[in-house]
Image (cartoon, rainbow, N blue to C red; front, side, top):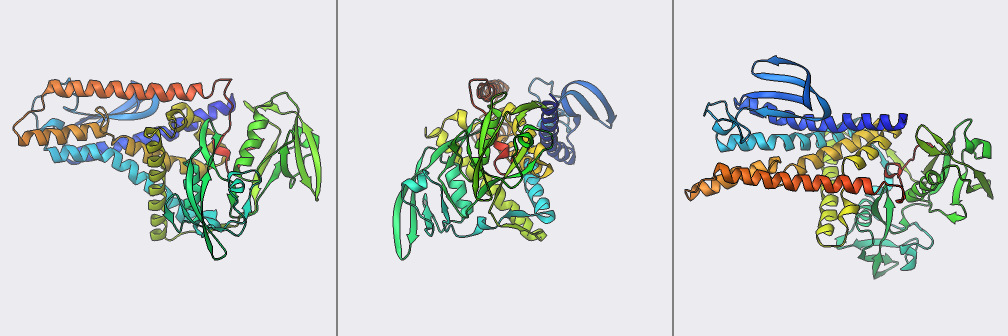
Length: 464
């Protein structure tokens, strides 16, 4: 229960902060243009506390999931007076600026967070920006089945020339259960192959897996917690985990996820970890226990073998890194969504709602503040882009109606209040259907008959 409450609290803080930043963008630009702002609320529902300064009631409301700004003349059901401080009395370009300001603040936040993080602490695997020279191929993987070998250099993947390892990982991740063209250089010969990327479940979602790596890596035990089943069974720090219940686990990030998943699905049931210690294979048998709402043995697995680079970037280099990180997220999101519309990927495997986000944020918080800030920038970027969709009731819908009104005005045609109301009603229904789908999707993926694999623990899982 303690773990659940902690996850819920972090989720409320993170999502609430992103939405309040969004609303602050609308607020500050509205005030700049002389639009009267009646309410700036942190949270929704009943007013709990607040102060009124000038025309604005700054309040804290009951439901702490975000907030809202109420501008004079903003709602269609208001009695408009034509006063100069009303939203609809302002020129169209000013109303467009107010509408764009919320998403702009989210995008600015998404740029600021990774910029500041890179200036303070920038630790990444050294291989990511290097040419993809294969040094290891997992047994029985898609890469092995098409004949990839250590020493092969990937020169093209899915049409991308001269990719880096970062490009390789992104392409593989967003193409589960798809086949992509691959070109490698072996010696002086160029070979053209088709890579059948395998889909793997990660936190009830799907990511791609190919099985070729830039380094030889191992899953080892980083820490064994005192007084828990792993210690009693004889597990030691430094042990390399090679199998669980007799089934080999990949020596990669996915392998650590699989270890965690198997442990969490074995509450009150003995589990056997096969480890290598001093060149000798040993079987460690223990029974996971339920602690703080989490099933675990009491150890922390990690991947070793990657060279890490840790350096603080200059402001210019950090900003460039942040821009590239945001463009990368946009590219991956666009690729995934295009696959949904093309029928290559299911919407249920792609879209995550508040339940899924809460779980991911909570798991990230258990690993420390850095993963939480990384998620904050991704959430902020997605919130900004989502709000630009041309759906009435979203900022993009308001922008669309203002632009449509301008175009119709050229031909002397009005955008009547009745049409605006119908558009808002359609937009509201569309948004509710989308929200209903993602919430139902979140819950259905987490009911007992579905397996659970914590995505937030891909790189360094919490104690198990």
